[in-house]
Amino acid sequence: MGHPLYKRVLLKLSGEALMGNQGFGISADVIKYVAEEIQSVVDFGVQVAVVVGGGNIFRGIAAGSYGMDRASADNMGMLATVINSLALQGALEAIQIQTRVLSAISMHELAEPYILRRAVRHLEKGRVVIFAAGTGNPYFTTDTAAVLRAQEIQAEILLKATKVDGIYDSDPAVNPDARFVSDINYMEVLEKQLRVMDMTAISLAMDNDLPLVVFNLREAGNIRRVICGEPVGTRINKNRNKT
Image (cartoon, rainbow, N blue to C red; front, side):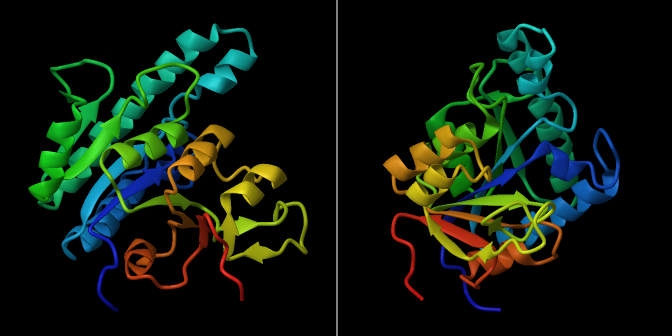
């Protein structure tokens, strides 16, 4: 395997990725596996920040659809991301990876407050930084929080870890003829409304020319392969490669 192409990256994990084959909660085996995958990149000397969703515990937008106040539901969803962040921190520190959780919502007994300069300093010292509680505001997803934090810490790329190989031109679960797309630009994602990330996140990435890679987390070694520039998953950037 080659050398890393990036010095600093942000990894976006969905809460559902931590469930494994369970219908709810956190799988001990999966979170251990994720921690080891992150370790393989840290050992490469890459600075790693992480944003974890909370959908395995509570999803604000779903709760809002059955009558709960959306702002309250989103606040509960942000707290769910803190639970996942603390669990991931525990898994990483169990394998001797120094980790800090920085929360956008003040909870000093559990996590450090999010301060940009502090986050960057932790990264420079080789610590994994987990950004919890989204943006700290309702109506914004953790996808948007991931793009925002990536921009703030000047990450060179955002890695969107999913349970599929990347982006298809239609839903492969519905259409057996769905075609895999290895390279696409932001505007195509927006125009075709490909739901790999929410539209606000894609627009923010486009405005700031932040490259994204969508890949399958379940295939061991994929994070490291992406870091080394191997053709894994789907790359989203300004100018789609002509092949």
